[in-house]
Image 1 (cartoon, one colour):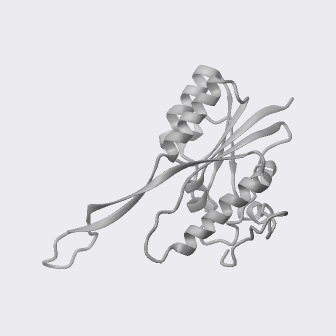
Image 2: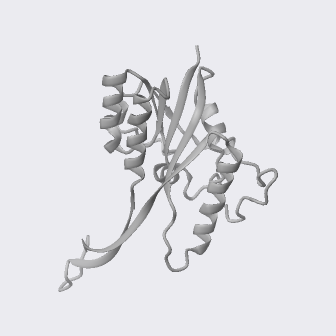
Amino acid sequence: MTKRTVIYVDGFNLYYGCLKNTSYKWLNLKVLFEKLLTSENQITKIKYYTADISARDNNDESRLRQRYYLQAIQTFIPEIEIYRGHYLTHPVMAKLVNPEVGQSPFVKIYKTEEKGSDVNLAVHLLNDAWLDAYDCAVLVSNDSDLAEPLRLIKSQFNKTIGLVFPNCDNNRKPSRQLNQYADFTKHIRQGILQDSQLPNQIPGTDIRKPIEW
C-alpha cells in the first residue's frame, strides 16, 4: 500500500548537521530520500526551507554557490518546492567565557539569525495535514521547537510521521521531543550522501557544481 509522502526539509539543520565541511553539498534530495524511505513512500513533494545568505564582506562566493544549488535542485527535481525565510543581523551584547583581568566580561557582537524558515515549515506541516495532502509527513530537522506541530498532527489527524535526523555524528541522537511523535526515524550517514549527488552539470542547462564543492 503506497503512502502519499511529503518531505519537509529544514535546510539550515541539514547543512550544518551533515553537509558543511564535506564534499557532498551538491545533494540530490530526491535520491537521498528514495534511499532512506521504503517503496511504500510515494514522494509527492519535497519542501525545502532556507534563507538566502545575507550580504557580508567577502562572502560573494558563498552566495553564488547557494544560488547555483537552489537553481539546480529546482530544475532537476520536479517535486521540489523552495520556501525562503531571511537572515537578520543585529548587534547584541555577549558575555566572554574567560575575560582577562580588568577586562569587561561583555562585548558587543553582530549576531546573524535565520528568521521565518522554521515558522514556514511548521505552518505547512499543519496546513497540509488539514488539507489531507499527505498520508506520511517526513521531517528533516532536529529542531525541538517543531515538536508541537508534530503532536497536533498525531492527535488531530493521525498521520504517519517520519523523522530524518540530519547529523552524521554517531555520538549525537535525535531530539527526544521530536522522536516521541515519530512512527519511524532514519539517520543520514556519509555513505548515503556520497551516493546521492546531482550530476556535475544539470542536463539541458549551464548550471554546474561549484569547483569548491
